[in-house]
Image (cartoon, rainbow, N blue to C red; front, top):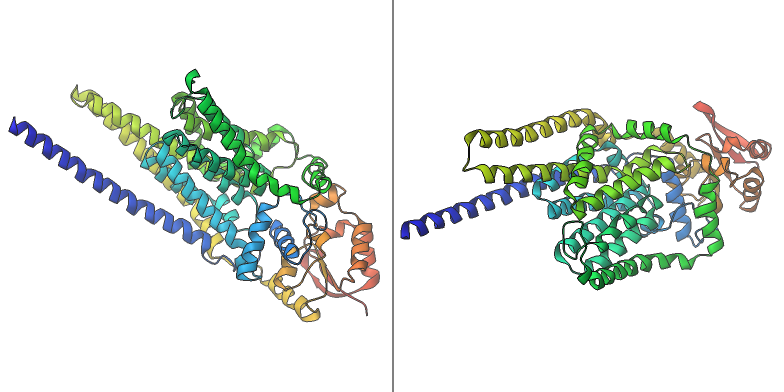
Length: 512
């Protein structure tokens, strides 16, 4: 009897040592991945001139808001306001520079990675978290826009945080997580509407048995589920109340009617092909994420299903809505595919380990089969990941270490020298005016192709603004404003050409 107790005690001690070893190994691996992840987001963050045209739009919008102009009423803004708030707050604290403007986006990118890791770990196992975070760390689309002043990263970051909170609710059955999930979901949507799928994806949680991991209902707990749903919706509506600060007429026009008036962006089939091309840049995410969708619907785990429903709804939005599909839109899919990738491998390894444990005392052939399947899963995952790393590393190095925009910085210096801080500039590259330390008229923070082609920016309006603000310099740089032919004629008649650059880029100074 004593020998049996002694043997059991030794086995328990061995298990404890192995458990400590596994946790230490996980900590080391995760620390390395997170270190690389954070470094690639923050290093040289303010060095490159521009990652995307929309950066200048968001930056000047935030700057003019700080100058006292009102969003939607005086400043044209086709997106919800949270992203602008984040940039403006950072600018207020750190000053008017590119680093300050991009820092909130980089921080929300880090939030997205951490939320993904903890959600996958909590829902499945440490392997799921490690794989998911590793896949996201090498996603070049997500990395590129993690360093740009764009709305996609903040919106999906808060959506991933909402997912983490709902996973905690599923596991712990504490209503506070419903509130936090609703709050995060609403902030995500108010960052950009592309995060909207997270809310309907979460709702099935409140129609399952409380605390259950499976998709099943229990009549006796309907009151508890209803309470969770109500608390979740309260969390959703609190941030939305921010919109009450603005005139509904302007909100309706710029957040709804403007998007309806945009030119069509191609057929559904064309968008599916386009989307596949974008997603195939990270093959490990595309392949493992697709497997994760199958795992989600076969396991019937409610946490898995929420992740899959959110992803499928996001894809449906991108390909079915009539608006164009842009490269930066795909950034909202990257964390979701990475999460599904982690869940696919984490769930598979968990099943194989359980299978091996059950047959460990059985036939040796069965044990070898289980070990072989586990080894195949590990080797194939590592091989696929290595191939994706090889494809991604050149682009990642270019994003993190390469500067760019020397000419734009030089022209910004020229604008600074020929204008005073209280003089206005009209430009279709608003970032250049920001770098110069100058302002654009608040109504012209956005001079995008979409605004012009949809009829929301016309020649007469721009000419009137040029006169009203006594604009000192006009810059035609990105090919947008030259579409306004009468405005170009007005500039040529009233301004002196002082700079000509390639691709038809020109700078004009008002004639004295």
